[in-house]
Length: 114
Length: 113
View 1 (cartoon, chains in turn red, green):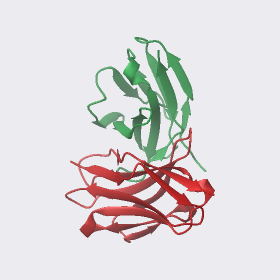
View 2 (cartoon, chains in turn brown, cyan):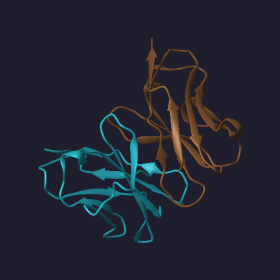
View 3 (cartoon, rainbow over the protein chains, first blue to last red):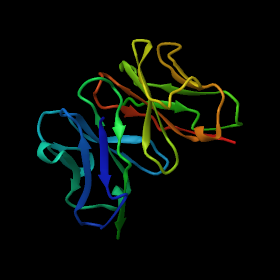
View 4 (cartoon, rainbow over the protein chains, first blue to last red):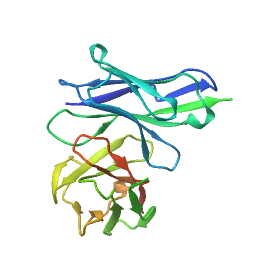
């Protein structure tokens, strides 16, 4: 079965520091992978997606993620954190075949310190 | 920019009552979904809908739940007899193709008392 593991329920960085949010997936075939962001009391907004094209994916707000098949990882990074990046981030996977559902990780709350 | 909308934003209901949560997906999208997020927990898939029928559902989506696309724009989730544990944020989503990125609405917070 497909699953997504996000390491660290909470991550705290200083403004201007590197942001690294970790995501590992389990899949017997390459899935589609996504990162979503959720600001307080709001819905889920797509940051970026991987759909078996380029392994380094650039998204909105300066975020990017790299698909590493050998490590079954899809970590999210941003070179310099901004206060407005404080939110909950969800890694998600849609299986290659056999369904349309998106499976979400447990989420990582990002705190940005001034 | 087109977006998914949901109404109401917050619904309070008594246990045992029926509720209908409404969604208007993005107009040219063909695939529709409901997810829920219990407070402090992960987002969970409930059901996907395509071509006027359910294409996939989770074990959470039991006989108390149903979905409908009553017209060309709305997509609804009905809970027949609400339970306390149905209290959650319910998100509607849509996509133009299966397995493509899903666009989420702002959610309906359902509180069952």
